[in-house]
Amino acid sequence: MSHSPAQVQAPRPAEETPLLSGKRAASLVAVLVVAVLSYQLNATMISPALPDIAKSLGVSSAAASQVSSLFFLAGAILGIALGRWSDFIGRRRVLLIVLTVLAVGTLLCMFAPNLGFLLVGRVLQGSSSAAFQLAYIVLSETLPAKLFGTTLGIITAVNGGVGGVDGYIGGLLTEHFGFRSIFVVVFAVGLIGLAGVALVVPKGKPASTTGKMDWAGAATLSIALICLTYFVSQGSESGWLAPVTLLFALGAVVAFLVFVWVEKHNATPLIALHHLRSRQVWPVLATTVLTLTGVFAVINFTVVLLSQGDKPGFGMSASTSALLFLMPAALIGVGAAPLAGWLAGKHGWLRILRTGLVLSILALAAVVVFAFNIWAVAALIAFLGFAYNGLVLTTVNGLGVLLSPRDAPAALPGLNGASFGIGASLGIGIVAPFVSLGTSEGYVTALWISGAITLLALITSMFIAPREGQSI
Image (cartoon, rainbow, N blue to C red; front, side, top):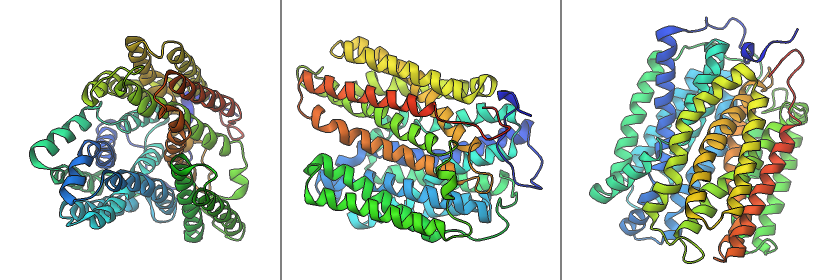
């Protein structure tokens, strides 16, 4: 018997604690918001501080950029392993471990005497990326189905930052107190989140009562993702056929083949290969990667460089560009994400996802047509705050939870979280050679490529299918 979309509920472990409602549900959501905010502030507030980090530690801007790149890479990798680990030892316990590691990493960043110590701290901080996937799963396992969509949207909204204000505050803190002051704020938020999780999040029971964590699978998949990430970065920097680029490509392929072998011979794999081949898993991952590859690069790279570049660009300052193009989309996304979750619960997750993708494609096509009209581009990017930040990102996160295998509830959310970082890196790497030309033809070509990739995301979303007896 199939269920209406509003009745869809993610699988819950047997003999789980009763579903929460009222004040207890509100308290849980509030605590999870603080927990994920500790990661998001690390992602957004540090960007304006990169020049100060380079100056204070006596390193180049390129070296200082590792402060962000390693943070995101560590988040993508650790998010997969930590999320799956929670199937064996419980969500609450892993959340506590994640936030404790975050606190240690933040202290290391706060007092780092050189770049090396700072980077170690940033890798430790990156583990807090798992808080998002863990929060989604906790919501699905502890709240009624009618609340799941809206509350997932609230958590997803945090993933876009605090309406763009957090980056601005990071700049002010750096300007008046230096970059270390940002880590003081992050440390305080992390401690509040740690205390809240300890007091509010139900203990629950592990989803897997037999077997053990597949650390070998997590390690080999992590190596594959690291090689893939550096393949993209080296390809855009040194050329796609450069020896070092091809070496990373080979490393990614070999590591993935080893991962497949490990999964075949493990009783409790990171994710069983038959699940990876199913229409509940691979199309979700492909849709996420392609969507991020297409749209993320437009909002956070192509349009940013277009706005700050000389003619045919708009010649704006960095702050003016952020206020006109980044902040409106972020603010709209904050409101649109909970609405998207509510709509998905009422009308179906796949329908809202595909609606968001169609609207995003239309917006990208219009950006190509009006690429050098400042106000048209600003309006269209703001519209993507609704279509992309709201509808698409909320629904792909929700589908990652709802379609995850019953025997590994955290597997797909973890892999889906990593797909966000992979897609963002791929998108920038693919269009960077065209955008860097600084010509009208270069910008337009980059925008067309992004639109075409987003169209592929819509096509792959058509392959997503619910499990038997499930309606999404």
